[in-house]
Length: 327
Image: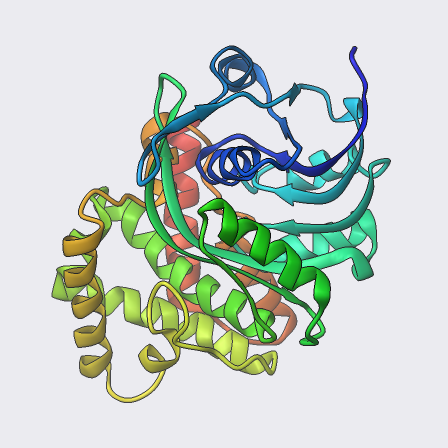
């Protein structure tokens, strides 16, 4: 086993679409980057580097570690793997000396897991309104470059979040430091719950189900249930997300449906081929990020004495379908 004793500026855990996008752009900008990957994906990165197409078109070699024990130190640890198995993966990285760690995964549970592994003071909040798709040949198609948001979970302004955001932004991945990251993470989560459920059940590109009135109505109701949970936790929602979540949780259902359909029109123009990562996972035969996201919402709501009947229905149906698919 080769041990990477050099302290890297960035260690990226997971070389899927978003992890590859971040790692490739940071490496191209001259930063030292190590990618942790497994199996066929590790072989692809080792043999051909990180290969970008779409909004960016370049290839760059990066060192790869297959075993977490190989990594010793990184100034910043970026968790970009799929949510299933995250707790076990982080347990194998507790030895890593790092100044800060943040995750671009879906759902608020990620911050709790990072805090348990590295200590809360080292954890930054983060969300990525950025999209890509890992192709079978190892290429990554960069499809949306809106914003990666970073912030202290305490809500304070910090030099480290501003520095990391600037590094990402200068590398070509749009990024900003914010003070309301917890609100923004929950706003993205509320949108993602609806987008996840509709992408799996309709199995189509994003703009199509957003533009359908029936699907848009169901999505609005899913967002509102997640919004009710955020409200119970005392977390204010924002429109600064992939969907205008705060607006969707206010006013009439019809006005909210209209707002979703308008979002669908924008996707049709600016990202017509965009597919949710959940749909990509389904079609690739990978496990779905269900228990760590919809399941997390249900568990958190139960602890608050709050019922989420529509989310629970989707959770049970998708869980059954996933068990049948993978059996």
